[in-house]
Length: 251
Image (cartoon, rainbow, N blue to C red; front, side, top):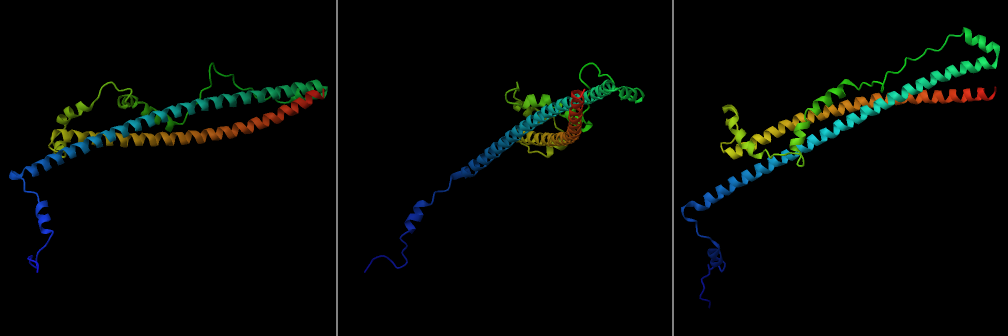
């Protein structure tokens, strides 16, 4: 017969060995609280850095949008010059047709004499012709260009000073009402204020980007209409040139 009692549990000794003795004086609770505080600071710092990077990307996107707008305006100026050149060519072609009719016969010369002359276009001003972009795009570009200094400050290759230390000094400048809304820990309060400021700037930046996008859309639609009008003029001019060439060969 076995000497072990019927209620004997062979794993009871192992369970007793795994139980760790309680830490005297509650030191384990203090360490855990310190660890949680450090973890909160670490996560707050990571969030502040993430919003700063996002804000920098937003400024860069805004700068690219302004550059695209300026290029689109230059394209509109080129289209305007091209349209004026086509109009001038069409006027010169009509004058050439009148001279050809005068050369072909006396009757044609009489017809041209009594026929109304085509309206002469006004001479071009010195320099490139003026082109006016839509007002929405101009306002959006002006608003975005004012943020160029912020872009230079936020860009890692352009900024000269790191403003991370100044954030802790700015924490003491807030009003008492705002101070009550943030944690009492100065370092954590500075992180929270930086996150809120970045989020506010991101909201404003997204609004400016939306205005830029709407202005670009309007400008593209207007230039599409200009391209359609210019295409029709070029097609008509091409037909008139062929007809004039045929008349010259018949002389």
